[in-house]
Amino acid sequence: MSRDIRELLADKEFQRKMEKLAGLYPEERSALLAALHLCESETGCCGEEFQEYIAGKLGIPRASVKGVVTFYEMFHEKPRGKYLVQVCRTLPCMLAGAEILLDHICGKLGIRPGGTTKDGKFTLVTVECLACCDRGPSLMINDTLYTGITPEGFDKVIKELD
Amino acid sequence: MAGELKVLTANLGMKGTTEIDAVMRRGAYEALIKAMTRMTPDQVLGEVKAANLKGRGGAGFPAGLKWSFLPKGKDKTRYLVCNADESEPGTFKDRLLIENDPHKVLEGIIIAGYATQSAGCFIYIRGEMPQGARVLQRAVNQAYDRHFLGKNILGSGLDFDIWVARGAGAYICGEETALMNSLEGKRGEPRIKPPFPAGYGVYGKPSNINNVETYANVPAIIEKGADWYNSIGSADTPGTRLFGVCGHVKNPGLFELPSTVTLRELIYGHAGGILGDRKLKAVIPGGSSVPVLRADQIDVTMDSAGLKAVGSMPGSGGVIVMNDSVCMVRALHNLMRFYAHESCGQCTPCREGTHWLELLSGAIERGEGREGDADKILSLSKNIMGRTICPLGDAAAMPAESFVRQFREEFEFHIREKRCLPETMRMTTIYSA
Ligand SMILES: Cc1cc2nc3c(=O)[nH]c(=O)nc-3n(C[C@H](O)[C@H](O)[C@H](O)COP(=O)(O)O)c2cc1C
Ligand code: SF4
Ligand code: FES
Image (spheres, rainbow over the protein chains, first blue to last red):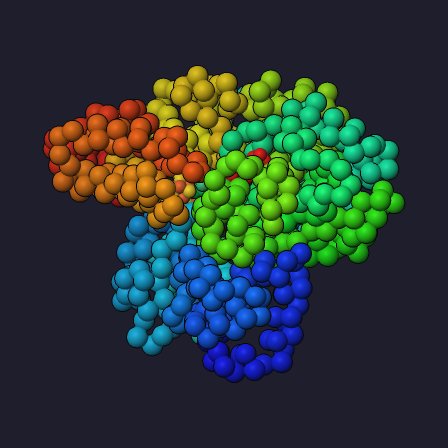
């Protein structure tokens, strides 16, 4: 998480992973989303440098890569916090108290949805239905799903993050 | 009350069911072996057609018929796609199938691959399910090791691969042609149809797309036959269905039932009744995109015919229950914000229409509504319906139209009094109810 992009591109292990991804699907361009996911999880975003690199690697025009990065919610052009807090706010979770939870989280972290804490530790975003509506309210922190989260439960969860 | 019948969910709640050895001891891949060693592809196709398996992704199209649209012939590359994008609000069945019994899904896909003599299948799983993607990839690797995938599977002459691909957070990528664009590394924008996927799908090749649950039905159909399948459920939707009940019920969760179950049995029987022992107010019976029902409309079966009789549809099987503490204007505003956010923006009626529906419902909710606004919602919905490239426009218009039609007085009260109904003033939570 949050590695420097140049360091990442020079990393042999990373290059090996990219080769593997490019050969994974019947056509190379299908690896684009997987490659962007990898960059997101390593560096916290998919900035211009990576876009240029992956465009060349998969033979996709740079503008198309940018179009893809900006289309999908899970890709970011600018770095975000170390922990991406994604709170589901769709109707079933709303019925389960997502709005109260979100208010609490905003207060706790001192940011609004879309914001990042000053120390760069948390970025808060709202997301749509995470497909576990029977156990709401739901949220994800990076790749980890939490369900049935109360305001107190949230405080406990973030306390345990480093 | 009809009891649960565990066909698709037989392995859920057991230990170790993501491992191929464990599920094979419980009969996994026997249907595949039967299909590939004792039946011709046409016999398999015939059985699925005779079973009248209906698509579980929302539209309910007969799966066997869809498979038969793929052009035949040795030289054509055909692809299957498994839609695991599960993003319809209120729907959480595919996640449970994938995370708990991935081999059931794979077995159904490979049988479909044999029936259609396809080259392979893309499983497109939504980006927010990294755990599911890992479980699936592991299961795929195990199936290769057992030679249920790869070259000349079980000596049948079929070469068949499965590729797992992750989405990246876009509801619209659940729409079949948007999904195919996304698989090709593009923005998830729906394509104009025709051409349909059966002629022009992934990489422009003939493709067939089905939902996770649809494929998961196939092994039991092959194992036990179409007659058995037709003996369960209703005439228009045979077999069992996965119903996910969420919202204000005491016992939310997933229930596998024949669709002859009534909505009342589902809510008050299986899901334990209304939370807080309050009154039922409204229920959306098939994922957020289908028309909402009032409390007096729940004595209907959960198949197409039953729900059609009260103006709704089975959709994706996600049942969202709301008690009388819910403000319907606010609930609609929440949904309209969702559709406005998820519209890909290609068509004016959808891009502008969903945006206006969000603004209007929001204004009414905040006490800024004006006389005639309820009718404006109705006319906006009417002008979106059927005028867009993909059905997302309709998916927003149907709830909008039905919320106003079914709860008109509540909308008028908001506009007149500039506030919520007294019993809906407080924000509801599961913890305090
Ligand atoms: C906006 C939109 C979102 C959709 N999302 C999904 C989805 O998440 N999963 C799914 O299986 N089908 C979804 N569908 C339906 C698919 O387009 C397609 O009809 C379905 O995958 C076909 O499978 P089936 O015949 O087995 O139901 C969606 C459709 C639309 C218009
Ligand atoms: S209906 Fe909406 S989501 Fe579908 S293609 Fe048109 S703008 Fe995009
Ligand atoms: S609405 Fe939050 S998980 Fe479905």
